[in-house]
Length: 69
Image (cartoon, rainbow, N blue to C red; front, side, top):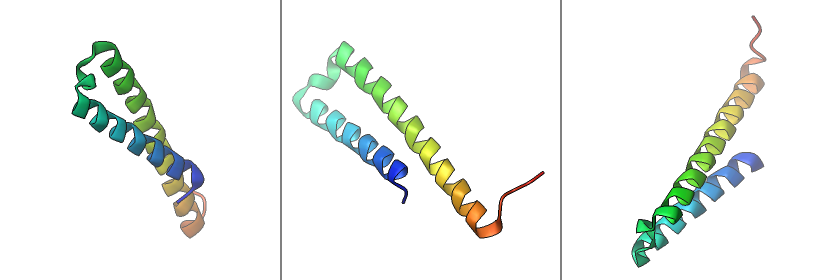
C-alpha cells in the first residue's frame, strides 16, 4: 500500500472513530459539528478513492505496461 493510500485510509478511519465517539456522548446531534464532520468525511472519502484508483492504475501499468491509444 502506498503512503498516500495509507494516509488517506488512516485519516478516514480516524474520522469514523471521531463520529462514533461523538455519537456516544450525544455531540453528533449538534448541527454545526455534524455539518463540519460530514464535510470533512466527504473530502477524506474522495481522497481515499482517488488514492486507491491511482494505486490500481499504477499496478496495472506495472503488470501490463502503459495503456496507449
